[in-house]
Image (cartoon, rainbow, N blue to C red; front, side, top):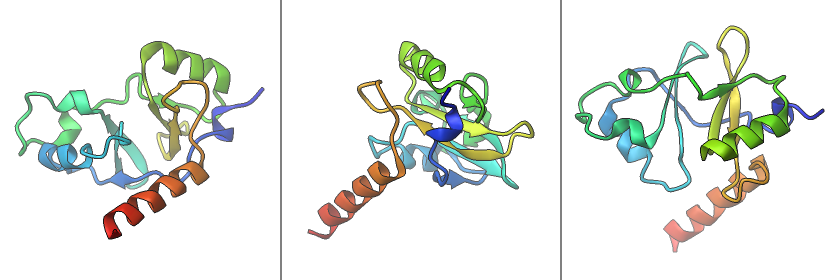
Length: 135
């Protein structure tokens, strides 16, 4: 059985726990971004999704509208069962945490819902973005 540990990205972008809603909105301007991971001392304290920010003032702390419920997976979780559940919910990202809540990575379901993004996929997208911005 493949597990979540086999497919998650190990170096996701993370932010501190005091990020404002305004800063979170700016982070979500990239269409590939589906989750903002708020981490304190290595522990995941909240996952914020774009819809969480609707109607919330820019000056508020994003942590107050984020949650862990339904937004985390364990590294030993069955990968295929997790993929099916994510696809059924229309969910593209799950934070991967250990038993103590330490962030291990991010599971990124591809748009078509049949597989997960790899580190190589992310690197290629970043390189394309850099070329586009430079040109």
